[in-house]
Amino acid sequence: MSIVLGYDESPGARRALDLAVDLAARLEEPLVLVFGAAPPGTVGEEAGAHAQALAEIGGTAVGHAVEVADAAGVRTVVEVLPAKPVDALLDAADRHDARVIVVGTYGETPLRGAILGSVPHKLLHLSARPVLCVPAEQE
Image (cartoon, rainbow, N blue to C red; front, side):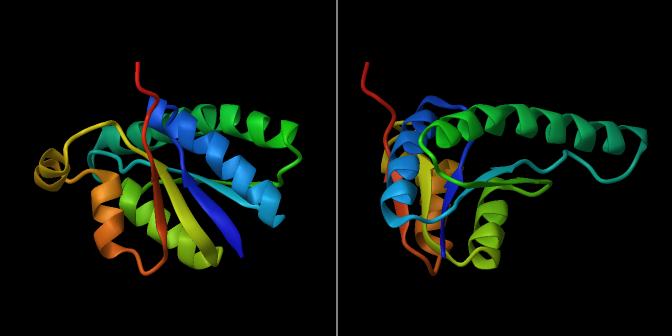
């Protein structure tokens, strides 16, 4: 089993990282760090450049999370996937037999999340696994 974390360096994701690292350490399970971003298109000259840019951005984003997990003695697996975040998280959760999917929130209202389709809102409705939504720090 594992703990899957959606990570993009947003304030909610940073707070979720701390919680996910603590949970993975307590359960002695690996932390699967997932960055999912679908390229805007799959054809044309720009498609390859977009995919490469997203892979680099994702690698940089999860690099910080790997450092935090390493410092806590938590083993990590990095998944930078060319897919929409929800699809990437659900896929990684299935492949790594996730005990829970952890994501940060941005403080949007439930109505706004439902209308705009926030990742936490979609996961709560689509995942067969437990989803832990961690709010960003209040300023």
